Picture 1 (cartoon, rainbow, N blue to C red):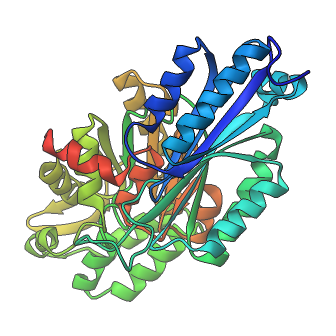
Picture 2: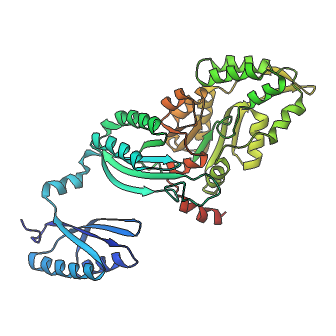
Picture 3: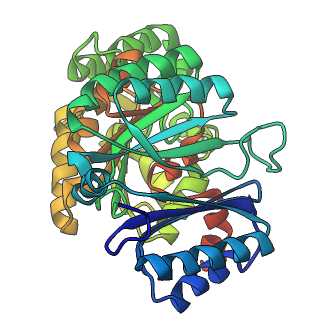
Length: 416
């Protein structure tokens, strides 16, 4: 069958220097010939255009006239045209989707190199994954040329398609590659929920803020090394959280209240936290803090940034001094998971619409429960257990995982 026979499908491809009006000119030519467009895609990389259009071709004589006119218009526009007929079996495979699932692979780092792309794309090829689209979400790919007051972010998103059976093996390979290349590689299924998240739930200590409050209090009480070693073991999952928390808190007995409150202005927020929270609020997200730390600091963050929900442990103070006792229930891993369910139900949203972020072993239950669980600069056990992991960027890097591009942010902020 020739390309111009009735019912034949033809792929038109045009490439060249991009400028306004190119697509209008090409599709205008197709419109004059009453052509049915079955599929269309366009990409521009550094002002270089690639345009593909799948059409239902007319009869032989009409197709010849169309092809001649398209070649003439393309050359006048400085484009190189290419025409290829589509085999019936290939067309049917395209129509059926080939039983393939859609996924998103996101590369995040301070810079992204050819070596990073080569490793990721080799993994995709080995698992018969097709790359359907590549898009840069960050303002620049290199930290050397980015113009920003904060450390540069680099992020590229790949939309890929393939068999769902390959998902588990690819996740493991991406995890290994991320560790070896010192970048982050997020791998998630493309779904309606990915573009429709409604709630972010954060751990606080070493996630939203740059310290463990209980460790800082311990330094004031002169038991810093003892408490820090217990904290580290608990966050690694080597100790039961409730027991470790009770033991650490007991060492703080007698610490004056005024010294406790002095921490409110001395512990900074995590890199990118303010930008992330501000953007989430502007986009209408609900935000929760589910912390194994203390309410006095969590409420301070809540007041400063307008957090919707706060759950943490009450630091008991009597007669101006820390008692060393803890009230029940302790906000441990199981309690965080239960609270996340409660908040989602209260907001009337699916757990698939929840993003949970944490760094310690007691965060693992909520990270696994949420539609997107993200280990942020986390301990090895947590990185291995969480669906996603980010260590190379600040918290504002999470915006890329919900599809926010850097160039979206000025528009969002002007509407605040």
